[in-house]
Image 1 (spheres, one colour):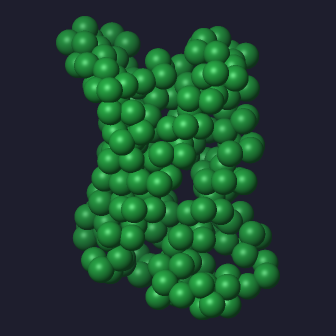
Image 2 (cartoon, one colour):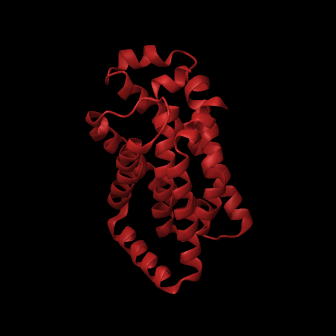
Length: 220
């Protein structure tokens, strides 16, 4: 819990802004006709761009923007070196492709309805299967690989045998806090809008991951 509190404390101002942006985006899509039309245009762009659009959006939202926001963060965690930015952009682009494919499979498996049963099933599959088995370990391994100077030997030594409990578990529990309410809103949106919405909140998640996966924070 100390790690989670530290992550949120270090990112409170940008986190609050992004939560408000995500909520505003959903409410405007629901009740503001011009915004609804603009988001529908974005959805069509997403459909035309496909996975390429998702890779670009994820790399910018979760890779570039959190890197930039670190200039305004408080706290004792280590800031990301600018030389690591290309790796982070590539990492989140790959994650964006995987998430996009997962959302598409969710729609095929469970349908595109927004009824409570469908939403609950999708959220459980997301946070109960995809997140702990794929998304969280991938992020932790990539950040550890970066912190180890891109050496797999040093990465294995840094993580140790209990890396799932010591590294992945704190990130996963933080993900439950961040993503549980958000995913209910996300899966209530039409499929082409789900990934753009995810990218907005993903920017907050990227800020939290910078703290949770840093060497100094993980060792505290």
